[in-house]
Image (tube, rainbow, N blue to C red; front, side, top):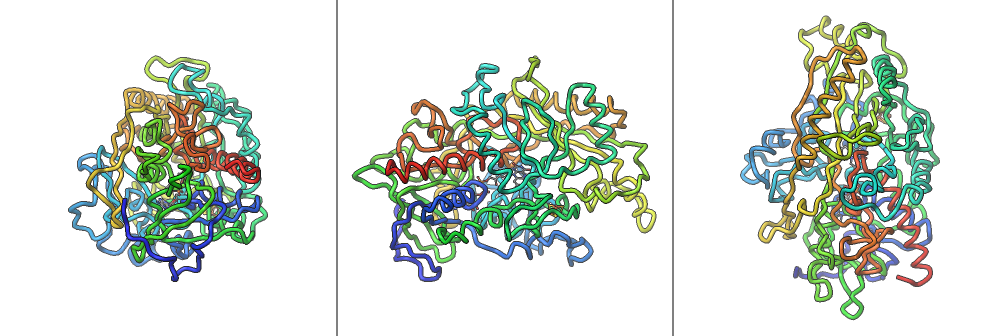
Length: 596
Ligand SMILES: Cc1cc2nc3c(=O)[nH]c(=O)nc-3n(C[C@H](O)[C@H](O)[C@H](O)COP(=O)(O)OP(=O)(O)OC[C@H]3O[C@@H](n4cnc5c(N)ncnc54)[C@H](O)[C@@H]3O)c2cc1C
Ligand code: SF4
């Protein structure tokens, strides 16, 4: 695209006249990790972040009670969070013609939109088109890690070698042994809480102190053990014993995690700014420029290699260039695909790194919706314990299509669940009554209700893809993404099984089932989008090699979830960071050898 270019911005103290060793686009889990690894290897790095840097602690206000807020946590009039039915009945762009001044994704309606109104993007400024999709975006320093749910899981060779196991899709170009040392590094540097289970399909991490299961959760664990299934304490990307990092403190067990979308104002839960970026800045090797939206990876016309990035200042709408010897794209799965597709040149007419035509394709994620709620009668009236304020409930790892073969679907799903760990129990919403009796009833039942919901693998399919909309643009004039994406029969069959299996497990444990949800949530709901620039050994069918390095352009790397070959059913963020660490270590070695 053609935009007028201005001289370096004077508003921010960033020198754009120098050529940096590397420019990193995006400051979330992936970009933060790239900044950490490269600066610790002595490289001079410029980090460009589209969003602003905000005083995150005063946004999150983790411990604020609803009654201390003038609107019980709601945003001021004029703000609206898109509802489930709107996603399904209307077509994107969802904010078009909305009477509200500001429109947010559904996460804005979860536990108080006042706390995320400056974190989530305003859909009015950031339209997308095509098939229905609940796209959740956080544009600020640290991206979605400021509000993520912190379930931190590893993948196994059941995931990396899925094709070998069941014949579908592609194997990853790495196996578990390749990434294991980097999972270990992430665990030790950032801290993770959990309990060892020795499961081949959900490898253990190097855990800090686990959260204790509640009485109801222990009951379910005991019962599932007889079915050869596991209930394990929530594996939380939270430091419970502390890490060597002056920007973070260990979890106080305040039970505040579940009160609203993520957000921990003492930073016991991992977030990219305090976990990765501020320590990287302390090395003296990192320069940060916020409000900087990359819209093109620039190419040297003589070599075809990347020579830097063109970006728009989101406040003054002017365009600038950042020069670098290596370009690292980490804008999150869909934004990274968008940037690659936007970067068209004579050498790369389909977008940079896209000679295979696979950029934007093989788009996958997790399907969710089905779940079960139950009541453990003998826990009604049980007194609270000091362990109740934990940052998560439990996880039931995948149990389908490991040794067995299900008739209706391939791959598997896990359940996230909990009982009575939150400062404000969900069951309060449906508890009848008011006043003292109401409070007594809520307290008595807090640990007795138990619920869990499934997260299943969506198969990576070439037909599920994003491309650039030929007409619609965002508020900065950058072409928007267009979705061509829907769940297949495999996901629908898997969801039927999720609801049935959840009910069976509760019944087997003697939990009274009070609700079974069979509905599938809108595509995108899991916020785990993956696969749009997949890795592989064959440059004809993949975009990146095993080090997330472009097959076409050797000084271009894409280090976020777009590189994932399949979605697995485990939450992706810990894998995103382990892979980025591995790739950036390789990058720094190659850089020192002069190979880039
Ligand atoms: C409410 C919620 C709950 C979640 N729960 C979990 C969970 O329990 N477990 C789990 O594993 N994952 C969870 N996730 C997902 C997790 O947050 C993401 O997997 C992770 O943040 C991805 O990291 P990323 O760096 O790819 O993207 P992001 O964290 O989104 O960061 C990308 C950054 O790039 C910036 N950017 C985008 N475009 C550009 C551009 N053109 N130029 C410059 N910068 C750009 C964005 O502003 C953003 O800061 C959750 C997410 C949310 C929102
Ligand atoms: S429970 Fe722990 S991780 Fe969660 S918000 Fe409180 S201190 Fe942070």
